[in-house]
Image (tube, rainbow, N blue to C red; front, side, top):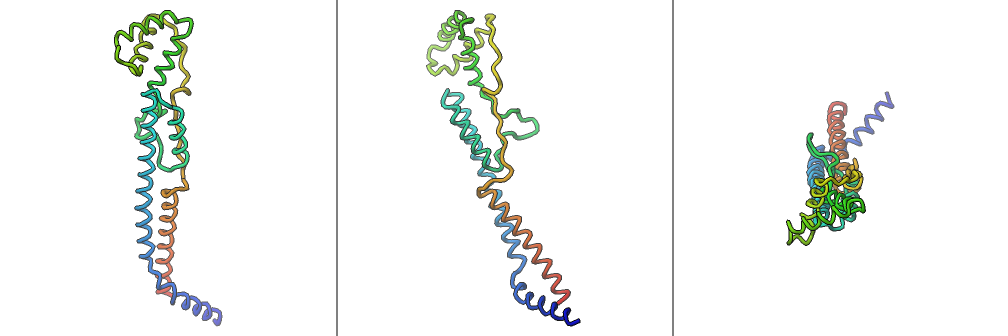
Length: 203
């Protein structure tokens, strides 16, 4: 009986302080951090798209594809919501470098076994695209020419032009921490609300 009175006095004393902490404070924080996490996740995805576009640009312009891929890979591995695939009919693997593939085909066609045919293809394609100094259109032209004229080109390994990177489940960035704070705020809101209901009924 005495212990019950002491415990009740203890809880009543605690209630004097805890009742000042209203659950709505934590509800507001939950909404704040939740909104912050949504914006941060969206930013992560947009940054991934920019880096992916940089890979496609480097591939098309015969630039530093390896460096662009490295930047994209490191970002995807360390940030949430940066998955490369989207939708049920998305292409897999998501990164397929068309122009790199065509250049590899042209290089294969230029080997000694197809050297004469390759030289003919170069002449033909240069006549078809005399102003194409970058080779952007000439490379697929050469590949098509040598294939149509009976050249045997070894298959290009997928690993040389197809790539897929898996996004991390949680990251040490604004998105990751704001999600943690959203969850904690929601839990605290539930706990304080539950305690207020219990205290009103028992104290």
